[in-house]
Length: 165
Image (cartoon, rainbow, N blue to C red; front, side, top):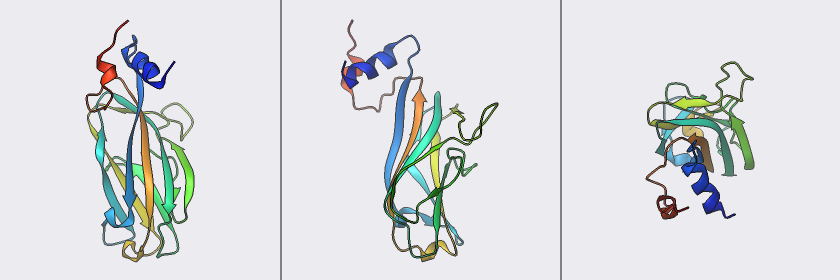
């Protein structure tokens, strides 16, 4: 069975649940300097209402250098690390920095699922050792994974809307 057929069946099944992600390439210069150790950035795409966020993945292709350390939290603006249990070390290049959400309602911390009741902006908070202005390099791919309970119109998969039995 093809990936297209599997995705189609996941969305058209009685549950209607499909795995999605928001992904964006980010450079150090994309962050807004907060005047201290932090730089922040809101990702372009949002997580749609009716979703459940379950984790993140970061691939650092160029370390965020110019200071002695740099770490990344991924959250929603009000809780900077809601979608990461611990922060990602982005000071050096690395693959597969994978984290479960911080929400642990009744479960093990770092393995929670965060329900999304209204469209949610993903906020990145990068923290350097001394001053965000000292960071002089850095590029990474940030991915936030979620279960969608809705067929999403922004997907570029026309076959999903041409379902036939």
